[in-house]
Image (cartoon, rainbow, N blue to C red; front, side, top):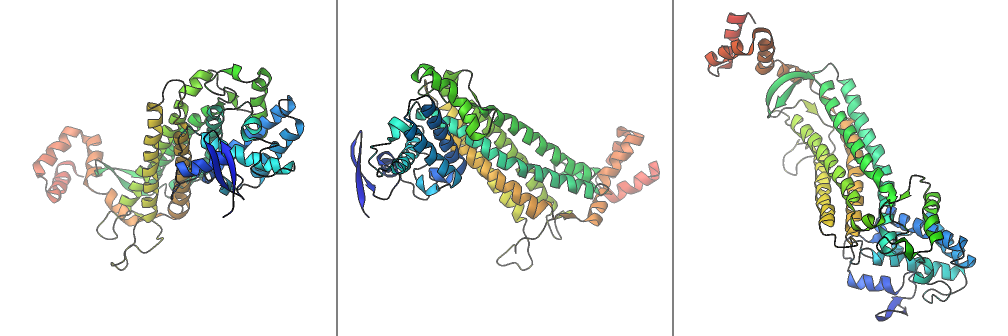
Length: 447
């Protein structure tokens, strides 16, 4: 493989001749070996957000004369081109590299610098016309670019998850309507309780999902406040006042999101990424709700002969390599395992808050990746749960009706009519013999 040589603070670096990245990215590839883990380019919304910020900065720097018009236009065109036709392979650095996002920021800076360099007639790797730091990164720091991009990415990823959650909620609501008159036996402490309908039961799922959506939407909404313009630790004086005033409005224009705003307290924004942790906590709670629902369906569909057998789930694959005819509740189990990982990612995100130090929390890169991956996992979970499980589930009406006519529902109805103490006395007299109990109830209460 042919190489070219670039130089940085630490000396010369051999870079593949055809690469659009440069020395800083190449060092990161050596320092943070990727293995089978996720590179920056696999987080599509994060790369998109970084490019949007670079596009906004190039436009503002060009408009204000901090960059010559030709340089600003070349950088902006390079960013716009990658936004229109994403090339994730250009961003190979490990997503969890050290340095609080420096390698990610420089990966983007170098790619844009080389694309802009060639657009102006130069050669990649020379940086004679466009330099990654002096031009692409002008009036920016990793410390304001990367956290701001992370919040933009979460906002974009949330817009992909929320419709899936809405479809899942609507699917349960449709099942509630479909089986609204179907009787079922409720359980408390896994023991028989009172008779309700499947409308009651599935409406409980709908309520939990809708509350989870609202909680998550509220947490994500707070991520519209970004620290862009605060550069290193939140000090506005590190950039020209004109740039500081114009960069957020320009970012609004680039993203089409007029709700973006600068954080009211920049020093707080650099020190405390608890807004990301709050979004992660909402994802964690949503994951736990999905586990409960999926686990319920596993139990209710247990059988086919010796289990509850009250709900019938769509069969999606054979359930055993040795037991003929066995069908497992694999879709709920898939959902549960995705949710397990979301819970683990929240632990990772929360640790980022715990370990923040002094004037900058450098763990935002791990927090951002954790939240983005959790959003991806829940998007997949919601979609498959809806399409391959909930929409196709049915109920065993006969078994549900039979179970609803068992003793505990009867005793509860009788206690409302004759009093708890009266019915309890008859239960005591039966000494756990259910056949005798029914006989006593008929003899004493006429029931």
